[in-house]
Length: 639
Image (cartoon, rainbow, N blue to C red; front, side, top):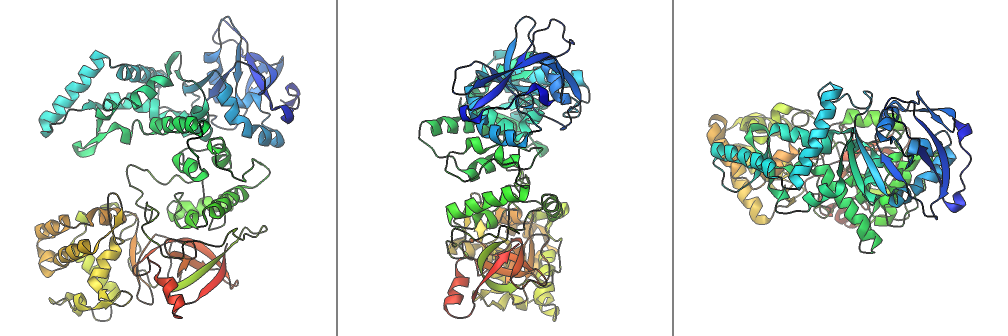
């Protein structure tokens, strides 16, 4: 493999190009040769965006007269790209970068943005792909490719407002409106049409590859290819920007619910087009593209090498940063270095306390073991959230100014040990997690995912287990004595503190804190829900529930959170994975409380378990207690 290459000269930003030889027969052996150029010099070439698939170089082609081995998927694609009469000049990563030379990879990756910016056209390959990359939704290669081709044509017809196509969409709307009694005009995509567009814009393997996000964002022109059918990206972009026409497109979801097609089918295309616009604004000096924004925007995309989750997007970042492409660093070092930069540049611990890259406990622990990540470091390989379906319900909150549990800033530059990647933080311990009596009450139980599936008796039973375990009759009593007890940290009634904890003291959407008027109104409704009559009258219970201002927040929180009372009586909402004996703490620079676990035998070492809602400690109360001498600040290490 290596004899076909000579070393590249980084001083002149030298790259290789692949000259794909012409052939009249589709199944003729792939042949080509390597040429060299400097990015400082003018040259015309096309670039290829595609999904690698398995990192196995098993398929033989011929380069400079010698056998050369490529992946199955690239071998599948190349015959379609070859011209019958003319040689084609192309940049293809697997052919133009010596994949066995880590130093060369580290030197070439920072040039990727310029390579794709300088190409004449980026060819975005949708299919066919090798079976190892894409078994296809139909399980039949011919049918799968037919779906892609038809999908490209449908997208073109929609963008160009083809009369016959639009007539069918209007008929679908008329049928839906007749059944549902809706009035405002919309264009409804039938299931078949949605499937065609989804295959092209959502499910084709290319959309999951991290490198493709940068490539499509930077190329001057993009062409979507499926077999011999093509569609210019400009056609898609024109449609996405053609409002209110594009806004009229809707999908029929489960239970007949109508949703905007931008919530699903066009979601990723819209993200890429948005990033293409940002790239232009950055070039014009109108915008600064940050690491966090770019990484969060494309968190759904994956890479074979976990480090490429960072390296594959650096070309889209315009802010100054210290991250250098270095494949000699471990995954843990790369991820920790980025988190260190995010902490130092913001002066906060947002990347720890508001980490968008989360997962359920089992998946999180497995991935951390594989990548050997410290507990405080964000695992950028995680793509837990579906922005549409669960509304970030495992996130404590979406907006960054809702809570301010700790001091606004932490000390920077943050102190991280090079040997074990432990970060030193300042913390105030506010409590210890007690016994978790219903560890699966909310989280992970699909039968209890929504409020209206949880009867008032279950809510009463939950609080009874915690508050009145020694005297359960006081909860069963018709007077419900607990209603009259107080929650010591805030001085309010315990029942009010309870439901505010379940709602995390917020309403949505958008997520915002409850006002005093909201609290008064919902306290009345919640008292009705918890009353004796609600136990026997489901209709009354539902009527009270629908009147709650915090209703949607309760539904959201029940997806991934569990109620618990700490040993010192604090009402909390926690995630799965928290254990009895874990420490509740507030960190300098942390906007929400965190859950820490002592490392046995190491007095100042703790692992970061997750975040928590702690009622009465979300707005600087811990720092006030320190100033009053009731609590103390300590320095510790997160490992």
